[in-house]
Amino acid sequence: MDKKIKKEVISILVDNQANVLTRVSSLFGRRGFNIDSLTVSTTNDPKLSRITVVFTGTEQGLHQILSQTAKLEVVRKIFTLDPASSIYRELLLLKVNADKTERSGIKEIVEIYRGKIIDLSKNSLIIELTGGSDKLDGFMDMMSCYDISEVCRTGITGIGRGAGWDTEDEE
Image (cartoon, rainbow, N blue to C red):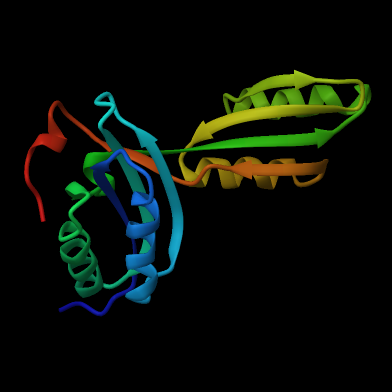
């Protein structure tokens, strides 16, 4: 097995009930995996939730955690989200302290990155931006010369391309 360390993104369909997230995330911790990013939401079926987990590990570790997670009785399906056949996105909310003289420069950067200014007050503004991690990182680099007061990122969420990708069994 390959010992090369790489980032993995998996999607887990689980029963939508209390303590499911705790059970899944604690399994990762007990097996020595650090979760880099985790998002959870209900699906179009209110009985199911989707957990997207990003972690770093080896190919062997990926197979191990997929197998062990699939054994949990609350897990309905589990998939790897390969970058070539999936779409990943993150949401960034950024609060910037800025007076009127700085706002035009900020607005220009926001437009280049296709973000939105969603709140404006006398001394600050809040920006919303979605995209891949590289896009959000680049935006943060461009904004670093301004007075950033708060940053909130959701972490990666993802979905497979094509119709019905999550109805096929994969392990």
